[in-house]
Amino acid sequence: MLALRAIWLGFLSLLLWAIVTALTGTWWVGLLAAWALLAYGIVTGVSRYAQQREAQWQEVQRTYREYLAAKASADAAAAEAAAAAAEAEVAQAQIRLMREHPELFK
Image (cartoon, rainbow, N blue to C red; front, side):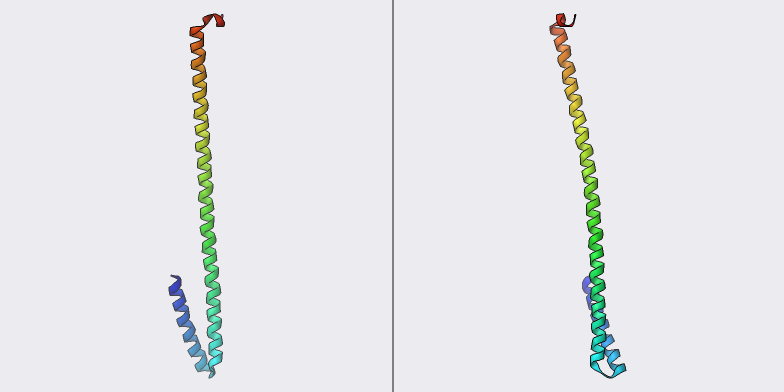
């Protein structure tokens, strides 16, 4: 896409050079007009490219924030599951202790 724009801009610059040269009768005025068009095209092209890159970077950051939120949620769920497993293990140990040593709980 960028190459097509560059070719199109070059063609328009040559056309502008020919028209301005024919109208003014001096080739250098046409050349200045063509250079001005090329400079404008380059500046706007670079600006568009920078905007696209910025939009892509914003998308990457948004996706990464979503990933971090999902990871934090998964980590929290894993921690809750581990805590529940630990509580179940403690309850089983208490039951076993009550069965093995009922005299402690009288």
